[in-house]
Image 1: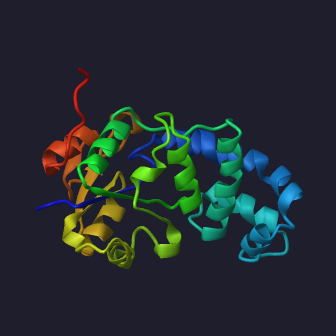
Image 2: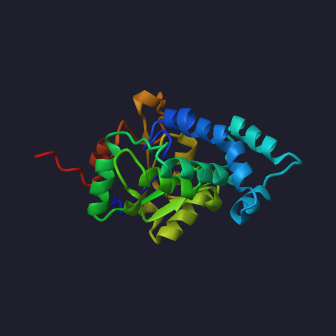
Image 3: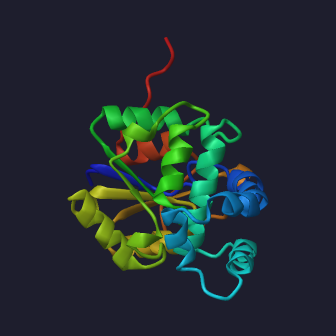
Length: 229
């Protein structure tokens, strides 16, 4: 097969699960009340809050946070809170050390890159714009979130392939989550599970498995970063 695009998840794939669960989520929860007190009258925030059910929207948001609910208004609001943190330097986007060199090599080699994460597209951009490896945002052709569909539904991957303008078979999807890989494969995408020992990922046995991005590159014939010197 010829891979012309790589679509990748973030949490557990490019970045540590702990960064999202132990840094980003607590940051958003702690900042929620102050953020809404200062900005809830702004049109963008009003639009998001209109999608939050219940008489006490903040209680609903906190319940969603506790449940790690994959719902668009929560993810949109978290993304805005994180933007404030990234832009003032309180946050920097974690990436595994093998990720940025491969992303740069793949982009330089003509491979289209895109992100698909349950976090909002805005939050995705922030993580890569303010990453520990520098500004990587411009390497990507697309950022996709739950507005395109749920990550465990095959139709979502078909929609992304259409957006990228490529046959599904020419797109490689990288994730640590077996059910997401199942959905991508059902739409015809090539798949590979990232099994990072530091994240405790368990191989599912239904998809190719690799431990890091250089191993993915070797398996699928993608460009490898040049060795120093």
